[in-house]
Image 1 (tube, rainbow, N blue to C red):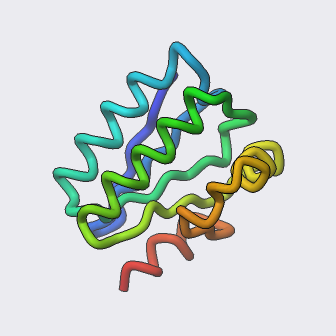
Image 2: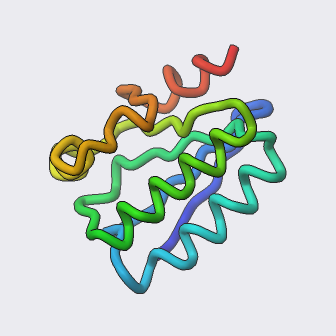
Length: 111
């Protein structure tokens, strides 16, 4: 899985490209963990190019949310596709994340 990074001031936006499933999960977890440490939890995940997520990917998102929560912040997701949003809602973990329509709104929520 390719994960693009883009800085918006003090906020880092991570944009995973492709499904968040088994073989792509370790790279995602590593990237998020490093980013949380370097950017004091000011991380947004732009999920616009994540078409679906499996149980490993869901676990990775929850763990990322918990890591960011230790910084006193919440994991911010934006541009989440319907399929991924449904998985988050059906598994009852959607409330663990802050959801935004786009990157700009998510980044501005840190101000």
